[in-house]
View 1 (cartoon, rainbow, N blue to C red):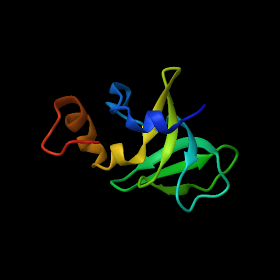
View 2 (cartoon, rainbow, N blue to C red):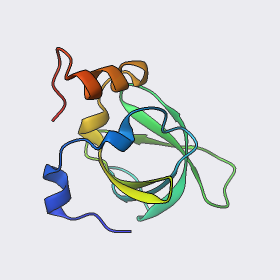
View 3 (tube, rainbow, N blue to C red):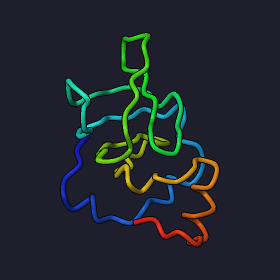
Length: 106
């Protein structure tokens, strides 16, 4: 899985419509997270963070969405993820992405 500078400019994917909890994730950049890359499963999501269950670990890792670069695997497809795209309440993400709500997502 890879994520380069070009994918940081890609608009939010329709694959981000809906739930991301339970999806595998490969984190390539995240401020304050070491060691990188970090592979795991999204366990929970808040406005500013993702809770990741790393592969083979029982403790959750809290990862800030600010500065996050990752790849989600949804339905066998790799979906580039830029944390700033997800800086909305999880329950509002589908509405904002699908309808281009009052707060545009970069």
